[in-house]
Amino acid sequence: GVLMLCPMNPYLEQELQRRFNLFRLWTVPQKSQFFKDHSASIRAVVGNSAAGADAELINTLPGLEIVSSFSVGVDKIDLDKCKEKGIRVTNTPDVLTEDVADLVIGLILAVLRRLCECDRYVRSGKWKKGGFRLTTKFTGKTVGIIGLGRIGMAVAKRAEAFNCPICYYSRREKPDTKYTYYPSVVELAGNCQILVVACPLTEETRHIINREVIDALGPKGVLINIGRGPHVDEPELVSALVEGRLGGAGLDVYENEPQVPEELFGLENVVLLPHVGSGTMETRKAMADLVIGNLEAHFLNKPLLTPLV
Ligand code: 8YV
Image (cartoon, rainbow, N blue to C red; front, side):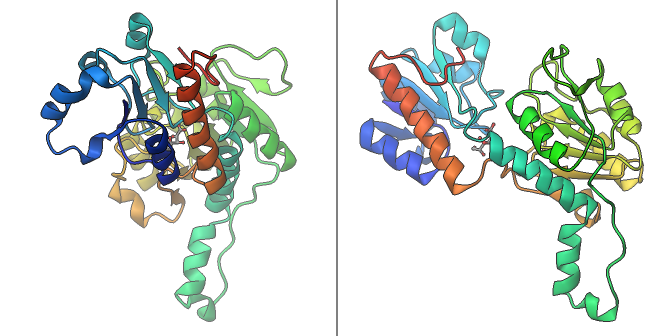
């Protein structure tokens, strides 16, 4: 049996249903009874950015062999516990890199050029009473990237086309890039106008955007978060934006999704997206095919396509 933890993608659901004995956890009326009846037969779990195999679920499923996540981020999975128990883990890297990097550029332009506010300006008829006020140029601004992995590199490549100097923070300096390295996030924030969070969420990167970093970025700085909500100390971000201590923000992720701090709703220098970084038809299909491909490889004793553990 394969256990899907929450609804993610109709194509994925349909293809899993076709191949396996599929259980949909969100449709189960009585979870404890369900686990009593089926725990022993469940060999695979399919989760995503919202729901993963935590220690409790892993302990409930004695026959669990593989966790295949419909996401690149695996912060909802207890990787140590999986390692310890010999449970395999796969994710969906690469196929979503371009969409997420594209969206970073979209968010930067939306914040600096006030695209959403401009659209509202036209629709509400305000244009007839006068033209839109001036905004801020993107081309040539310094872009700082936290995490120069697949997504971070794809953001850098795009920003280079806008003639932006690129700098980055990561645990270690990357030997084969020409981008400027800063050994701390505060230094990075102090030396860029646009700060992009593109690293995995771990114990070390939780609240990597704190008050000190926000102050270093300053009233002309813009924060872009396409990583995970908990990368940011959200109350600190909200108060900095409300008090004008930070120039603006483009956010795709939040600490407590789908809850978004309502203080942000009235701010025109903030663009709020509902976690759609990978949300194109093309990419979600490719992600689904990877989830299925990993499960099939596992059950056929073949090498996994994108193994993490
Ligand atoms: C979500 C993501 O997984 O890949 C990730 O880490 O956050 C997204 O792609 C997607 O919304 C499906 O839940």
